[in-house]
Structure formats: C-alpha cells, structure tokens
Length: 387
Image 1 (cartoon, one colour):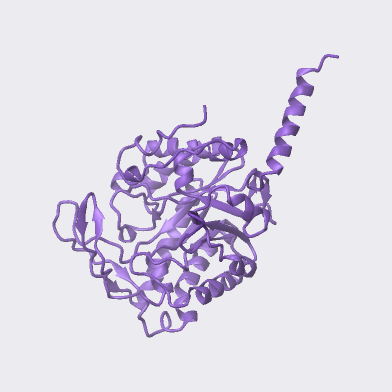
Image 2 (spheres, helix red, strand yellow):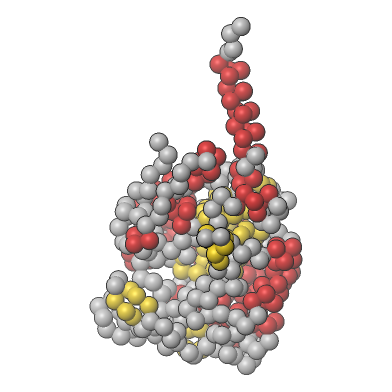
C-alpha cells in the first residue's frame, strides 16, 4: 500500500514531537497570561560582546541575533546602557537616543522574522568605569555608585592593565534622575520593537552595588539594613513597570557572585527577600532570572550547585536559571527547578543550540580569546551550524 507524502509528513512530525517531549528543554512553555508562548525553553543569556562603536548597535548584530533565533525561542540582548553616564565599556550599545532606537529596529525585526521574542537588557555600570580615556588621558567624568570607594583590583583592557576610576556616592536626591533614565530606556526599547526589557541587577554593576553589603556603605534609607539595600532596585523595577507594563519586565540577579569587589555576607537572605519583594511590584513582573553560585567539581567534572530552588518557590512568576548549564538543563526543567534555562557561552558557540540538543549532536567549543574583540565576524557570526 502506498503512503501519501502528506501521511509521511504527519508521521515524521509526530515522531519529532514525541522526541522533543522526551527532552524537557524542548517542550513548549506559556506564561499564565500568555505574554510568552515559547516552543522550547532554551534562552539566549545576555552576553556583552563589545561590538557597538560609539554605543550604536551595528548591522552585524542583526546577523548575530538572527542566527540564534528560532521559531518560539527567546533571546536576551547584551547589556545595553540607559544613559551616557551609565556606560563603562566603550564599544557597548545604548538605548537612550533616537539614533540608537533606529539602529535597534532592524536587529529586532530580524529576530521577529525568525519567530522569536527578544528582550533588551537595561544596564547601568555604576562604578565599573576605567580611569583612562581611549587616548590614555585621565577621564574627567566621575562615575556614580552606592559608595565612594573604587574597585581595588585593576582590569585588563585591550591587553593593558587599567585601574578603575574613583566613584562619587550617588546623592539621594539624584536617584530620581537615574530612575528616569531607566524609564526612558525602557520606553525606547519598546519603541524599537523589543518584546520587553530585563533589568540588569547582577555582576557588580550599579543595581548590585546598592544590593550587596560589600559595596553599600550608606547610612540613610538606601543603605544599612537588607530592606534598605533592596530599595533602589525595587524602585527601578517599579519605575520601568509603570512605564511599559510589568508583564514586559524581567530582572536578573546574581546573589552568590563576587564580581568587581561586589559580594554579600548573606546571599541567601538577599536572594530570598528579593524573590519575595518582586512579587509585590504593582501589576507583577514577568520573570526572575537568577544566576547559580559558582560551579563546583565532583567526580572530575564541573557540576552546577543548584541552590536556587528556595527563590524559585518564593517568586510567583516565570523563573529562569543560568550559570554553566549544558544538557543538564533538561533535568532542572524536568524537575520543575526552573521554567526556562539561559545559556551563554554555549549558545554563543552553537547558534543552532536547540537543534543540537534535539539531535544530541556534538557541541562546538567556544573561543574565549574572541569574546570581546571588535571584529564583526570572528568569534561573533562565524561559529558553524550543524551541517
């Protein structure tokens, strides 16, 4: 008996659906209000790429993000400055000017054409600013922070050791201006076509400088107690939610991280309070994106500690876990530990990552040396797809 091509197609699709169902990362996900309707749970994590000269997104970014976009997939952009004063890495994009908004549009359109959603990560670096200009002269603009203390450990910038600038403590009366910067950036991101924004509250930048007790030495309403240290980020999130709607807003936190001399004496209490408090933002926010503690080693291999469950249970919305995951992401989704899993370096090196997971194919290795080069192709859009 002949089998029609249509019947064969249905049989093949049914086989693929069954195969995907056996791979938790490839199962569909939908938020309760339908804001996100995803075909799989593999999320592109925000990755600073430093390929935006003059803080202007470039056409090659459309190729980069479209390569990693799939129908029903979700991407989060590289950290994107909310103002000129928020910048600390020279060739990184912003979203505070009309020119930047127009430059983002074709990038967002390229992702939407592939059927994916894309969120813009909003960023203020605070005190993470080098002490020198590109020409080697000392910078005149003094960065702001929760503290007046600089980062003690120099960083390498283009192969040269560079000290960090000494920041100025942000005055209480200036905080409203920073909130306005986040509002404007969120509004501009929506104008550019983004599906939402993510507040960057991780990895030692301004929001985390307020959150953690190693960098918050204030003695007024934004410092001291844990409740007070959380005040700034909650005001930022509320301001952005008021501007574009809370169901377009996510927050990224790294309570266990120690970047840029930014750490906390009780990260568990910090994470639990933030996960709980974010439920109280008027109208609610869409998701909480949290970074695992540093990876450990067991039986000769790296393992993810998986210590985020208390915060996943405390937060009422979508929960995204990040931090060194590979195919183990299947286990955490299958166990209900996270709704979605964000992949950084692995997704960078494997633009077709969901397909590789589906076929259990070998994964490309990433090249750390090209993470932050300015080349628009090398280490950016030249990682090979399957076949």
